[in-house]
Length: 309
Image (tube, rainbow, N blue to C red; front, top):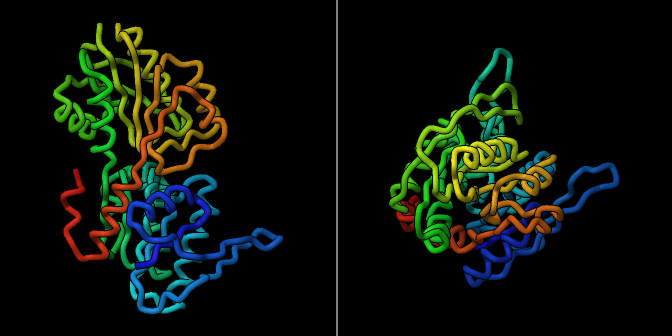
């Protein structure tokens, strides 16, 4: 087994290798003066089972091209099988046509990875589960739920209620509520355009309770902060939030700082930028052991299904 990392999240790759008790393999990823990416694999991978850890987080296009070029270099170096480990799948929100003459970019990314030589994908908390169907190769879809549920169960004991920020997240939130033995509330949200939303109504009784908003990612935090304000107005004592992917772009940190949210729990699928690391409301949980266990089971041809919870 060989594990490589691009520049997207090297600290996560190091933690995964530590959990596997193997060294992180050597690869040079740099840029020419005009911005083109150069990759040179620093060790023999002929006949090896290779894993490339590269979430396609911002800057998305740079990290996606790094992944594609690394896979091409490994394929040409005669790696036996190349698995793309993508804790965060960029372009995942564009998973269907929502208007005339628009692309399905999640499918485009899948096609790119397959054409260049990826033979298996390990992803976590895809924005839409049907993205797995865009691939003609095996896709192992992990969930950060066990880690988040463990934290929530230990941190919040009484009067907890799970809140879905929109109708699309109800199934995910209901699963959390069931395992935590709590109630469920839903925010009725109307989205006018991308990265802009208007929360309209709270469905469910949150009065006198600690509300936890659950989402797969937080981008500009507009939805999250509007939902928190509505929950406070509906009588919630405290409002917390948790998500798998802390994209936190644009005005997200400023919005979080000025919002009614007491804390935001995230995973390290994406590295936090400087402003996010300095935000006292954000707590990071590690998914390195989960990903490391999945990689070990894939390599040993063992079942990964017990991790899909």
